[in-house]
Image (cartoon, rainbow, N blue to C red):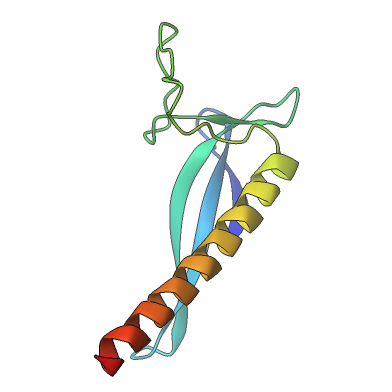
Length: 105
């Protein structure tokens, strides 16, 4: 996974994307898939989350307490990615243990 930045030529705004790369065995080429994270604030350099269509949320929008909050800085985003990778690793280990239990029975 990587974070890439693209500047929209029409509006001049910069957007942040999470990019994942996958190897296409048939064409023997790398393929990328991008997911919009948010708009990059020119003044602060922070990523402002969007609703996924490149638009800002409503000014009246109030997130719930249990709703996931996107990290606001690159440093926070990197630490969140590391946390999620560690959580993923633990869950995969748990799945492996459960598969072994199923095979034994």
